[in-house]
Amino acid sequence: MAKAFMTKAAPAMLMVIGGLVLMVAPWVGSVPMVNPPVNIEGAWVVVVEETAERSPAVARVQSEADYWRGLESRGLKWRFYDVDAPDAASYAKPAREAGIPALVIADPEGKLLAAKPIPATTEGIDAIVREATGR
Image (cartoon, rainbow, N blue to C red; front, side, top):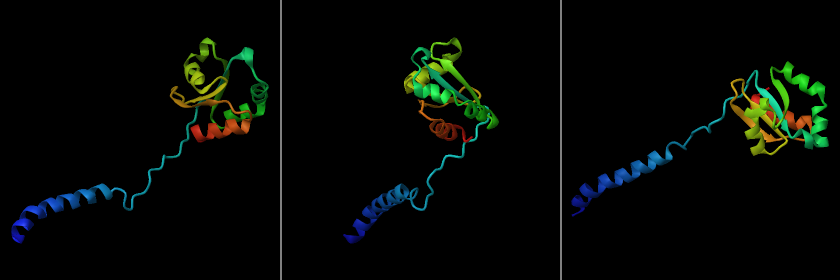
């Protein structure tokens, strides 16, 4: 009787144990996936706003000319657009989804990298830019 049990039950038990090992094995000693560092030269940093409703905070960050020129020295391009401007068409949808006024960042081919409400400081903008472009 014991022999009959072993010949019928043993393969099933091995399958269960093997399945558990396969389920657990990927997590044992594995290293978590890490995104490779981003470094995108030529990305666009775009402020999209409703010009008629410009807030003092947006006006303040837009007036920081040295900051915006500094983006160019880091290999980035920048523009300010009214949300209704024809040239802003590719940025308007993600900007509206993020909330106008928005900071939209796209790679040189136009792929969206980030779209967020515009921070009130250039330091806040820079944090988003660095996260999205690595620059």
